[in-house]
Image 1 (cartoon, rainbow, N blue to C red):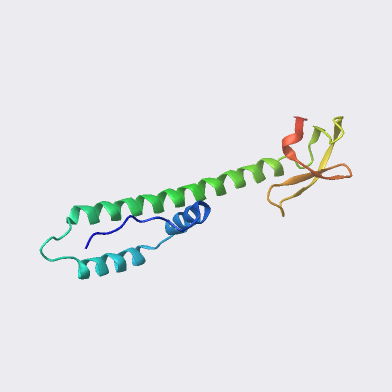
Image 2 (image 1 turned 180 degrees about the vertical axis):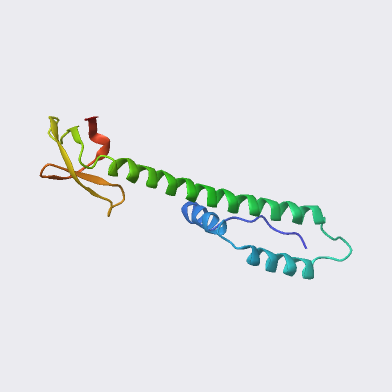
Length: 135
Protein backbone atom coordinates (compact mmCIF):
# COMPACT_ATOMS: atom_id res chain seq x y z
CA UNK A 1 0.00 0.00 0.00
CA UNK A 2 1.59 3.33 -1.03
CA UNK A 3 1.80 6.13 1.50
CA UNK A 4 0.56 9.53 0.41
CA UNK A 5 2.57 12.63 1.17
CA UNK A 6 2.39 13.97 4.69
CA UNK A 7 1.64 17.61 5.43
CA UNK A 8 1.85 19.31 8.78
CA UNK A 9 -1.25 20.83 10.34
CA UNK A 10 0.81 22.32 13.19
CA UNK A 11 1.52 26.05 12.85
CA UNK A 12 5.26 26.90 12.74
CA UNK A 13 5.21 28.62 16.15
CA UNK A 14 3.57 25.59 17.75
CA UNK A 15 6.02 23.27 16.02
CA UNK A 16 8.92 25.32 17.37
CA UNK A 17 7.42 25.29 20.86
CA UNK A 18 6.88 21.54 20.57
CA UNK A 19 10.51 21.03 19.54
CA UNK A 20 11.69 23.14 22.46
CA UNK A 21 9.59 21.22 24.94
CA UNK A 22 10.83 18.00 23.36
CA UNK A 23 14.37 18.93 24.45
CA UNK A 24 13.19 18.67 28.02
CA UNK A 25 12.34 14.98 27.61
CA UNK A 26 13.95 12.83 30.25
CA UNK A 27 16.23 9.87 29.69
CA UNK A 28 13.51 7.66 31.15
CA UNK A 29 11.05 8.75 28.45
CA UNK A 30 13.64 8.14 25.75
CA UNK A 31 14.37 4.65 27.06
CA UNK A 32 10.66 3.82 27.14
CA UNK A 33 10.35 4.91 23.52
CA UNK A 34 13.44 2.91 22.62
CA UNK A 35 12.05 -0.27 24.20
CA UNK A 36 8.70 0.24 22.47
CA UNK A 37 10.47 0.72 19.15
CA UNK A 38 12.51 -2.45 19.68
CA UNK A 39 9.37 -4.42 20.52
CA UNK A 40 7.66 -3.34 17.31
CA UNK A 41 10.52 -3.48 14.82
CA UNK A 42 10.58 -5.96 11.96
CA UNK A 43 12.78 -8.90 13.06
CA UNK A 44 13.87 -9.49 9.46
CA UNK A 45 15.18 -5.91 9.19
CA UNK A 46 16.50 -4.87 12.61
CA UNK A 47 17.72 -1.31 13.09
CA UNK A 48 21.38 -0.55 13.63
CA UNK A 49 22.31 -0.41 17.34
CA UNK A 50 24.85 2.33 16.55
CA UNK A 51 21.92 4.60 15.73
CA UNK A 52 20.54 4.13 19.25
CA UNK A 53 23.91 4.89 20.82
CA UNK A 54 24.18 8.04 18.68
CA UNK A 55 20.69 9.16 19.77
CA UNK A 56 21.52 8.62 23.44
CA UNK A 57 24.77 10.56 23.02
CA UNK A 58 22.96 13.43 21.32
CA UNK A 59 20.32 13.52 24.03
CA UNK A 60 23.00 13.61 26.73
CA UNK A 61 24.83 16.41 24.92
CA UNK A 62 21.65 18.51 24.65
CA UNK A 63 20.94 17.95 28.35
CA UNK A 64 24.46 19.04 29.32
CA UNK A 65 24.30 22.13 27.06
CA UNK A 66 20.98 23.09 28.64
CA UNK A 67 22.52 22.78 32.12
CA UNK A 68 25.58 24.79 31.02
CA UNK A 69 23.38 27.57 29.63
CA UNK A 70 21.39 27.70 32.86
CA UNK A 71 24.56 27.78 34.97
CA UNK A 72 26.13 30.51 32.82
CA UNK A 73 23.01 32.64 33.17
CA UNK A 74 23.01 32.20 36.95
CA UNK A 75 26.71 33.11 37.19
CA UNK A 76 26.16 36.24 35.09
CA UNK A 77 23.26 37.32 37.33
CA UNK A 78 25.29 36.68 40.48
CA UNK A 79 28.20 38.69 39.10
CA UNK A 80 25.90 41.58 38.22
CA UNK A 81 24.46 41.57 41.77
CA UNK A 82 27.96 41.41 43.32
CA UNK A 83 29.23 44.37 41.28
CA UNK A 84 26.13 46.37 42.15
CA UNK A 85 26.47 45.60 45.87
CA UNK A 86 30.09 46.78 45.66
CA UNK A 87 28.73 50.27 44.90
CA UNK A 88 27.15 50.60 48.37
CA UNK A 89 28.50 53.67 50.18
CA UNK A 90 30.40 54.84 47.10
CA UNK A 91 29.85 58.16 45.37
CA UNK A 92 28.64 57.61 41.82
CA UNK A 93 27.69 59.74 38.87
CA UNK A 94 24.96 58.52 36.52
CA UNK A 95 22.99 59.96 33.65
CA UNK A 96 19.39 60.49 34.72
CA UNK A 97 16.26 60.05 32.61
CA UNK A 98 16.45 63.76 31.75
CA UNK A 99 19.98 63.27 30.36
CA UNK A 100 21.60 65.30 33.12
CA UNK A 101 24.52 63.75 35.04
CA UNK A 102 23.66 63.31 38.72
CA UNK A 103 26.11 62.58 41.55
CA UNK A 104 25.31 61.01 44.91
CA UNK A 105 26.11 58.27 47.39
CA UNK A 106 24.67 54.79 46.83
CA UNK A 107 22.48 54.22 49.87
CA UNK A 108 20.77 50.98 48.94
CA UNK A 109 20.78 48.10 46.44
CA UNK A 110 17.52 46.41 45.45
CA UNK A 111 17.85 42.89 44.06
CA UNK A 112 14.15 41.97 44.17
CA UNK A 113 13.52 42.52 40.44
CA UNK A 114 14.95 40.95 37.31
CA UNK A 115 18.04 43.14 37.53
CA UNK A 116 19.52 44.97 40.53
CA UNK A 117 18.87 48.68 40.97
CA UNK A 118 20.47 51.25 43.26
CA UNK A 119 19.24 54.16 45.34
CA UNK A 120 21.43 57.22 44.87
CA UNK A 121 20.62 59.91 47.43
CA UNK A 122 16.80 60.02 47.35
CA UNK A 123 16.42 58.55 43.86
CA UNK A 124 15.25 54.91 43.82
CA UNK A 125 15.47 52.48 40.91
CA UNK A 126 18.62 53.75 39.21
CA UNK A 127 20.01 51.24 36.73
CA UNK A 128 23.65 50.54 37.70
CA UNK A 129 24.53 50.38 34.00
CA UNK A 130 23.84 54.11 33.79
CA UNK A 131 26.69 54.82 36.24
CA UNK A 132 29.46 56.71 34.45
CA UNK A 133 31.92 57.12 37.34
CA UNK A 134 32.57 55.77 40.83
CA UNK A 135 34.69 57.39 43.52
